[in-house]
Image (cartoon, rainbow over the protein chains, first blue to last red):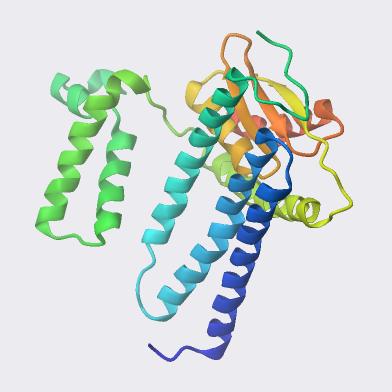
Length: 109
Length: 169
């Protein structure tokens, strides 16, 4: 372990807490929401600010310890490419199966 | 542009942006610039676009860097804002979300632009693109808590689609 500047240390800890908070909210959302389509919103929330907070903390920590933080940028890119596609496929399958929805069913065939 | 290139370049470098991204992606993953990784990056950059070329169409040219940066800033800001809105909704036991289906009519025509628009809608919390309907030219969006679907659709079009149309033309 390298000794870090206490300010950077605190900032990293704060970012980790923010990330963890939004991941927790995402998990609570899974429990609290009523139908499949509402639950679909939870992972998009968790994978943006939740993972984002942890990634920014990781980049800051690496920068402070002298490693160039490139992997974190790639992780962000990969999440932004894959998360919408998987959410879209899940939603399509759910609509096809006519899963119950609190918003009713969109009027189409 | 492509009409001045030789046939071999057109075959192997039909998607220069994608080739550059693949090579850069590989080198970033490996975090190294030694000879072996450079060769591997070059191979990936030449072979993968050729293998998937039939699926991805013509590719695109970035027309406008300014609107692209502005759109990035708008999206990041909206992600933070709507995360907070949704977190409040989840943590407040007295509130029941009012989900709604929001049809968003499309004005943008470039397929990559439509894909990016749908992805941005999904990545901002509170809205998920469920069906991208190219025959009706609309995206069917499920909104987690929405009392006015028409206003929500107008908002998404103004914030994301307008800059995307500047970028993709």
